Picture (cartoon, rainbow, N blue to C red):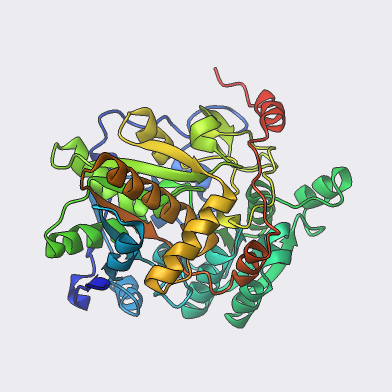
Length: 452
């Protein structure tokens, strides 16, 4: 039997996001002001975010209602499909049942629209005229550009230089939606000019691009900052993925033994995993929850769980997270969305609680898994999503070696249609694995802020 699809009707789009903060056995560490090193309040974030999102950021309410206007936009692609990968199972000759929740069906091509739409909606409600943001691979920038067009907002995107050069079609998509794109580091901001003065040929990083976007927002009262990962409200919006997946797995008559997702900042992974982690906390689920990160940027597996800045220019508040150091610039791997020095504080906290684990995958192994997946399932995954595929394949082969069936659920966070140059380079043998740059990370960690 070939691939099986499990679909839900539109009236099954979740009516509320799931907030795991309501169920955590220990609260997260407070966010600190970068000047005073004291816990921040809602007013400290007001220059960057609308108050509705700030309140979601700190909320401990379990179910947060999704506005009707947001659900109407979601209906263009949600509920997204869940597939059983029968052909991939056959190719791997595994007893495992493999399921993937496919987020590439949205018009922007990835899971990022799940939070771009509500962020644009709430900003429009509160009178914002323009949004600034950063983007790595361009998936977040594409989603926010689209959402901004839907709600009549201007959109300014700082795109990490290496991805700006590698992914011209992502730039074209953002521009088609009406956004203005600048390669980061740029000469438009104080942060960008300082970086270029020291490193004229910098590849850039998400940390640098965040600094530039935050700087621009802080200078203009009509501009707010939007981001596609890391903060609680962003991860909250993504839980539509896991909420739908649980209902679809019930339709399939199956329950996952392993739940996987790729991790850069943590939003796609959290979107699928946190509803399951919530069930684990309540004793209703016993699945292993596994984050899969690139070996070249291993914040969860090699980083330090401590307070750090979310950006290179040290303009953002300090959060407690797994970090490689805010000045660390990762190698130029094609999975641009996973090149972030830190991990979402919520994901880091859940890891610290022992409710999940993390593994790494090298770039060549990720692309090899993506090619095998494409030839079995007919979908070209984004380079980021390839890491989740590789993790799932690893689990399926382990089931084969052990002769034990297991059910694997993973998130296919987006398609790779705008990333075909990376596949061209892989097929031509031009890609390489990047080893964990221990010396560079040690230098970056040496500059961690002192928090008493």
